[in-house]
Image 1 (cartoon, one colour):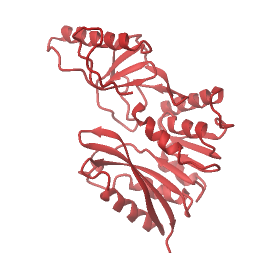
Image 2 (cartoon, one colour):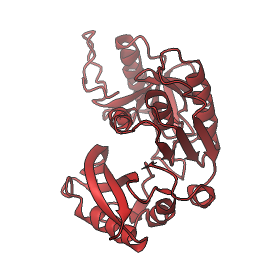
Image 3 (cartoon, one colour):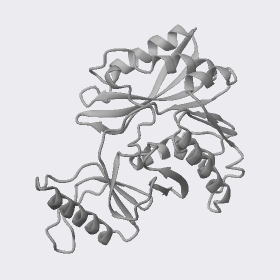
Image 4 (tube, helix red, strand yellow):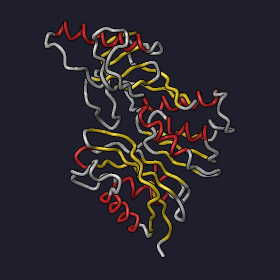
Length: 312
């Protein structure tokens, strides 16, 4: 959840950051307002901000500050990347997060999870037809996969993740799904399969031309990505995905990184997708381009939904 109100309602002069994420009972701050250069004064100001946030939202039990950029394939802060400002000193910082009635486990230190993607996850669920086989790559703690298993009548949902900590969270999320009485789609947990390993290693082992829908919320590849990118970002993933996608009508939700100037046409991304799809003897139809949120100043994560069919 974004919190866009930067003043504490109690009447004090504490400046709460304009935007932060709420993950379960954790408020995760990405930065603090510019403060005193004195270290002890900084700590006092940070603690006052944390206490103000907890006073406003009684469900928050921990306020943490991210102290480093997300790094590595895990895109996670790591052991030393979070400072707990107020609340219990949990190490690692693990919580459970609820989204549209589906609960997942999140290790905030060692996994990537964004509550800001909630509407995007719901958008994808609304497109899934009964009987589909769905593949979720880079599934993280499993929110996308659990939403799909719990909210749709897909025949199967297969989730792939390389980070072992995220896989642990995902398996715990599957157990939550099994016990969730509000889930109306029968056999939700049983229809979910979790595979641990590198996407490029596992894709060749999966059944050919099998999946009706593939989600690819891939991580940003640094200098290879975005409008200033120096290469074909994600090309190895796309080449490995196309053989497992149903060739006549299979749909892919491809997440790319674009500038605000490129959106919504995303011409660079469209040309890249078309070139690789044609390499595989297929043609594609762009169904929709969605804004899946900001990743940096004037940089967006866009989801390009496309459908493939054999080339005539």
